[in-house]
Image 1: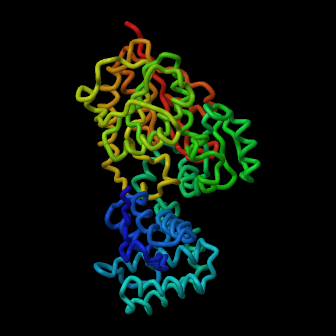
Image 2: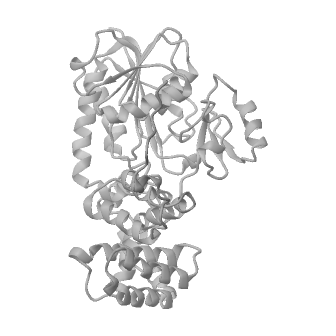
Image 3: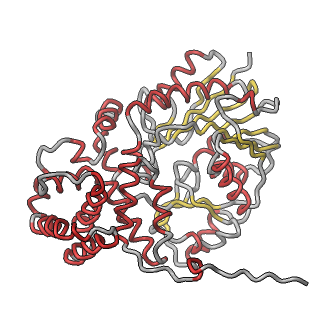
Length: 454
């Protein structure tokens, strides 16, 4: 029997050095805001450089800076005559890191200042020490005055920490609720879990949670989604590796319920990645005839495969463009279609605060056109008498109720079905619009369409 010995390189065998967390946070925020990269991609890269015990602190700082960006930048502008540019630009973000700690974290002011100033060495420019030290110490001394300023008539973009174009859209769409929507976007999201009923019913799994010392805040009545009182590591959840439970927001858990698949149905999950809804449908109705999950990106479909594998489920996975089904559709019509359309993501800003700065006003018109194209193409794959559930994680009417109104107007075989258990229905709104924070869930939109037999 041959054996093979693998010798680790010095980089692989050496323990992780104690990287400067503030320097990594500044780099991460710089990549997101200045280079337009995703926080979901950049943060894990920086977290790989720190010990496990420091990952949460790094995340807290990065999320906090990006959530409160306009307010923090306003504070810095009051104390600096000239902005940092060029090679010094990363130190602007290091200042933001320092100010966020002083204003919003429990770290003692002197520690926040000293640790942030020390990060200049990690960023290889000790000449910036005196500038950062002076600005941050002034922030500490003037906290009360700066807090008073935020209560005055500052621009909405600074008061509410959102881009002006987005605030205007929310004001137009929700003239009486716009402030509460913006405030909800600034909150830290709760942790919701979905019990795999192939292993346990909700009540028996709640017993397991209690035995594990994990407390429940609420159970959403219609979907049986469970909101935890406090976020925990997934490995602390009983049976997570065995597929007994998944992480999924309560709003997203409405999809499988509303689609209401039946025995023998052929089901399509369109734009399926990362696969949470695909898996939930299979858990809820294991006796469907088939599940097809498509997404345009192969790399995203690997997450669908991973989720299916952990949960012990199977689906037909296809790399395909929803806007061009003729390139991948095998020819058999579907009984049920879930169209989780590509959207602005403006309903999940509390989970992804970088959306506020990565999205532009011009993106919305482009998305609306794409949604319209996909909806029309995918509708042709639905059997007469079949049901299509249109879903987005957006709060913008043009992506949601206005999109559906236009579709029904131009498709006489489309009938809008009433969504049951909708205790948040709004007058003159087609479908079900959940706003961020309602039932402590994400912002989400659903419209259920029946294809009328002609």
